[in-house]
Length: 322
Image 1 (tube, one colour):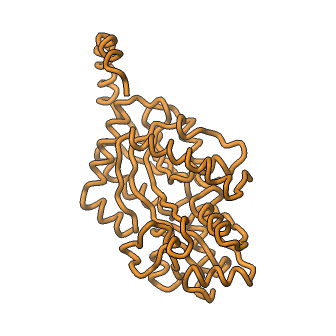
Image 2 (cartoon, one colour):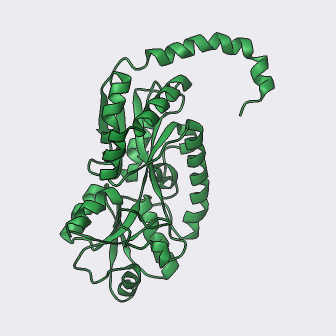
Image 3 (tube, helix red, strand yellow):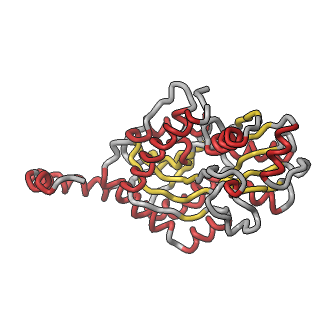
């Protein structure tokens, strides 16, 4: 936080700057805004973007165009936004892992999330679940561990460095089992192969997995939260069997670093207002998403804390750059 003396000393300069800065916010937006989703269509981040597109378009008075740029566990799309012009017309809706864990698992990682973005607001938390194909004779984490100790088994994730991937490696390290990691290019592709039985175990997000579990195409055996989910009250947490295995995902809206503060503040106000509307809340609930919001500063602090946290955890469980 800036010191009062500094603000006072520069009071005249700040006043002189205020008028053009306000004009920047007033003029924004005068053309379409691109919202980059750093995963392919069909996943939870994509679902969140499509829920927000209409209310943001109405608030801005301009079209919001969704641009799905999947690849490298979300790194490809995030890097594109980090390198975009910081004028508010290219935004990113990202899951946490693309910003906070990928950097420790991908060689030549292209950005530092602490400095590459101007965070706008959190938009949702994303519950992660452990699911299996119905043909696999396991119904809980204890049975999965026992099966993996006597049978060859692979698990699928939405990509290298994603929360799905880290969950799998945490479980392997804590209980001493060996499962081959099979990374996919997003949650939708992962789910297609799990339904088909091409992979028998997968970590997924609740929005992607729940509809398939409800029709019997897959079986959710645990959730990766601190507490059980209201959508799955009878499904235990992983931590009930393997203490310390918790990984809460979230989605958030960001702009490139250097985007004018008045634009960030305007986008924050618009997005937070949209997240409070009954229509958006209802649509998110149908997708298994839970509303979250924040100030830009709170969001930036969360990113920094998670980066520092995973910088210690990931090496401790033997995960290395691929």
